[in-house]
Length: 127
Image 1 (cartoon, rainbow, N blue to C red):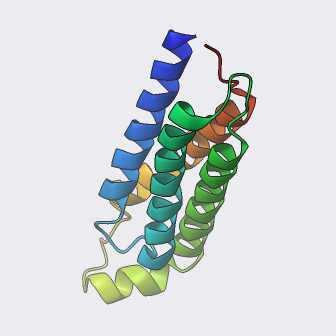
Image 2: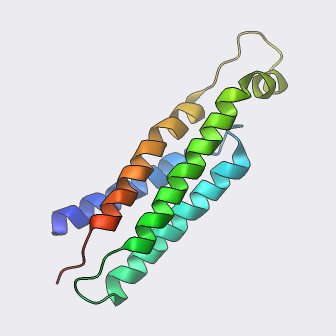
């Protein structure tokens, strides 16, 4: 149980760090900020539930916040992908512009957020 708890916490912190890094570029920043807010609230609620919830309880709210963070990250990535020409033309004048590492981190963090959300929903507090 301790190993599962530590691995879920590390997964959450890794995705949060990836999201903070993904905000740096023009990856539809308003939705990415909302994603970071959802993920941060989820982590704080998880810590609160970990110490206050009774034994046998499930982390539903934490999981739902993580899934919402994954969905907003997915929406931001889709918007950036579909409007890449306008965003990249606005960012650089050269014709060799590319997405960059923040876009890739956004796409990589989306499945991690959804997986951690599902893990939180199935995670039961034990003694």
